[in-house]
Amino acid sequence: MATVPTSAGSSMEYAVREAASGSTHDGSIGRVVSVTGAKAVVQLDHGKVREGRFGSEHLHRPEIGTLFAVETTHTVVLAIVSALSVPVPAQRDGDSEVWIAELGLVGELWKGRDGRAATFNRGVTIYPTLGDRVRVAATQELQQAFCGDENASVRVGSIRQDPLIPATIRVDDLLGKHFAILGTTGTGKSCTTALILRSILEHNPAAHIVLLDPHNEYAPLLAIGARCSVSAICSFPIGFSPLRS
Image 1 (spheres, rainbow, N blue to C red):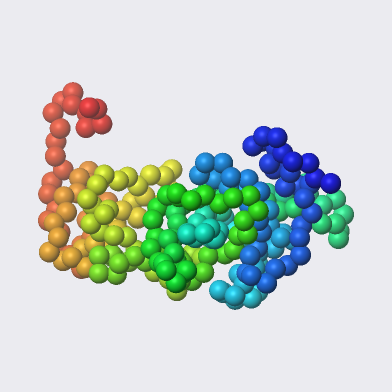
Image 2 (cartoon, helix red, strand yellow; image 1 turned 30 degrees about the vertical axis):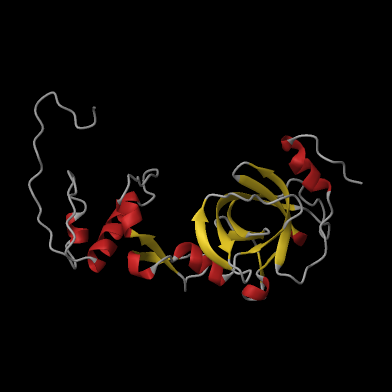
């Protein structure tokens, strides 16, 4: 018989001791065994993920970046898979093992009067509880989370979880406040910046963008479909570093 964990650190231990339950008919693929702040831990059923009634019926292994959904009374909490592990691997063929998925809570869909998810908000106000069932996010939920208002958004790509769903950004929300594109060398920061700017210019040809580009990286990328005025690189005074405040 499993023992009840006495601390947040022992929640993983508790999940390992629990035996995997049988398959379900509600499309769920596991249950919440730990909730800490903006994170949750899920024990997957039989180490398999099933998309259920909202998607194809084939079984597949969970992946980093997959968006899961957790039903609450008034919301559908959306969480992204950030880590996967098998705390106690099977020692022999045929032995069962427990698969654990660690999730980052990214937002929630508030339900309307008909009980269906209607509007998406970043951040979580109603947290999942222990034992809540978890499923792969439905197509409609992915669209509400990533597409937004078509009139106020521009497309920058597709959702990896479902390539048929466009990934969009809200131009006014993005440019109306400070934001940064961060990453290590080679992760695509320059390409992402150019892609966002091109998408904005394609839908707003009269827009004006001031871009400081000392390495002349962006002019060739932005010249297609937009008029670019490329100025000479400014010469900074001796002793002045643009990286210093």
